[in-house]
Length: 418
Image (cartoon, rainbow, N blue to C red; front, side, top):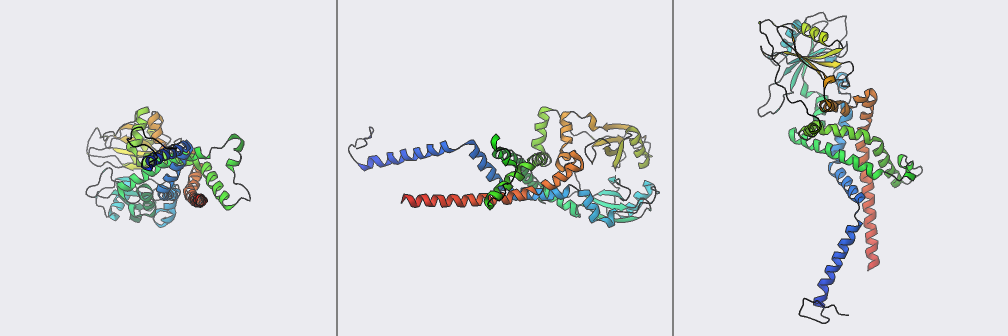
């Protein structure tokens, strides 16, 4: 039977008027049929797959380095015991003024120390940190320090090092910015952000029917390698999902604060960058670090002083940072500013007084390293750091097998149609 085009002047059985419309109709039908087959689950499956393939290597690197950084201080102390570990002998016998003078002689940076790192245990040395001059074009805070370790009992210099050259600092920079500055920081920030998406899509794809909830949490016994690999992927994924979500979300805060902070600020106002606190008096005679520490502990009796920031000039104030006994962070976020001449407490920053937004921001480090749940949380983060490697391997194996199976199936259908 002929097909007549009402807009054509040609009639009859001319093939030139039939074939184009037939092809167009068949093509449109095929397209609509393909669209109907697209489901929300298939879209998420593709998204899950492509994120994994694009950023899997970065996620694996972030996980492995993150596991090492969970106990960064303990590892640094163990790797550099000759610099950081001393024999405790009673109480500190030398004044801070004497210890600073000794450290100044050993430091290649011929300026006053920026701050003092207090020991966290009796067998740790005092660490004086001298700020290395920033390179041309450097933006933001300068966190490059040269460290001088001093035995507080004997007054002897144990050794010194450029903090940036230490192994744990190198691992931290690899974790944070791939040793590539702002570009690497952005890449790892995007990796963290997409890991949040990866975790959410993974939970959705895993979610079983109520009748199969038990099987969804276990690996089938005596299964084929293909089934074992798939079960291993989904069970490791679901058991680590909550920790993975928390760690990756906090990673977005560290690497993409320009996105994270405004989002939090929308719901609860965040405190901005405060101007430097200045001393109110200047009689030319500064009080000693010992007095500053005593004043800080009188102001907050349960404060463990962790760092003493020395005044950078004649107008600046001492700054004490430390941890109150009930803070979740091991690196406390309590701050006290003290007049370097009168000893007056000028300002305090107490995490107990934070509003919801600032309290949430303050939780990001404990979320990232797991200390929000104490030692149990740290161990969990350490273990989960190896999960991306396992998930990447099992996921790629599953994808390759499925792709190969689809190719074989299509080849078979093509052969049958011939």
